Length: 450
Image 1 (cartoon, rainbow, N blue to C red):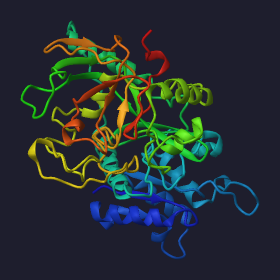
Image 2 (image 1 turned 180 degrees about the vertical axis):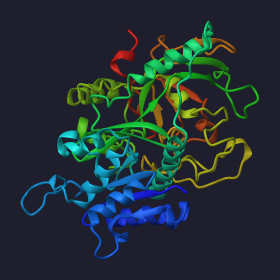
Image 3 (image 1 turned 45 degrees about the vertical axis):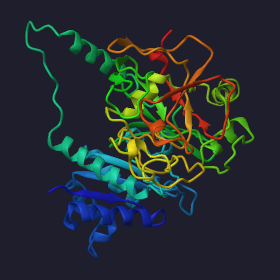
């Protein structure tokens, strides 16, 4: 029976700790979850009891709230006290090589190494699993549960190295996988622009900070996929010929479209028709993004090198391993995406027409941890529309011809068919409207094409 130890500060965020405790008890059983000092009998040496309890657990969750690093009455970090409960718990787990999962809650972040006593320094490099308040709070906890299950499987059956048979020769496919894995390994350390990094059930993430705001990107591994739509896909267009695309380089892609809060912090002002800090910025042209926003963001974060995704990168991430019209399947409803529900996809049932944008992290996330790849605002891509040729195979394609730039994803005022993963538009770079926005991309320095 697996055992999970929850470490938290009572003065920090007990609400989050108890919410996570309740969900873990419902999932694993109450006898499998230990909630630190609540389970220590009176009169027992708490140091000995904590060490013994931690020794019996399979994984420790370190709940990190805004006051987790707070100082005591003498102005010294409480973690510097060898008798601090939180320090004792995490120190005991690290000493026994028990997996420790940092769980930042609220607006807290993963602590840096220089903020921790030396015995806890390793915590700064453990992949975290965030639980943030808001509309997706329960979704965050569900991802935490899945992450714990992955840890438990890893502990029970650690991966073994594959040793080639003597004299064996890898085929081309094996070689390409090895090459892709080699490129992926180069980002296992925190990228230089990241204030926090971690891994959850969707994969690896990294976040940069501007002011009191944190903006997260997802690592998209290199791979191969079918781009475009098959002839039998309902309401497809003739510029979507199905073909094979290989992306040889991994890249970071923002979890959400750029919000108005981020635009204002970087570029100042707010061009949007629908106003709200957590709404997507809109009424921005490709030229606005290229000439105003990206250069200023790169000045603020010189190690970041912000870009727009190419059209191929965008569709690869949107599909997230799927081949259906939408990453959630063949059907589309306004409970899954923001579009004009009076014009449903493929004769399906009509739905709500919100007639406006919604917050960038609302509605269903895709299998790779990305929000709203379908609907809300069209998203500008870096390249021009290229001609798709049915059945061809291309590597790292970029549309270079013509003045138009690609838009992908559909919008709040669009018909259902325009939200398909394969749907593509091309417009002049100076065009802007209240249904046009964008999403950030970043390619690590060593992986960029020349």
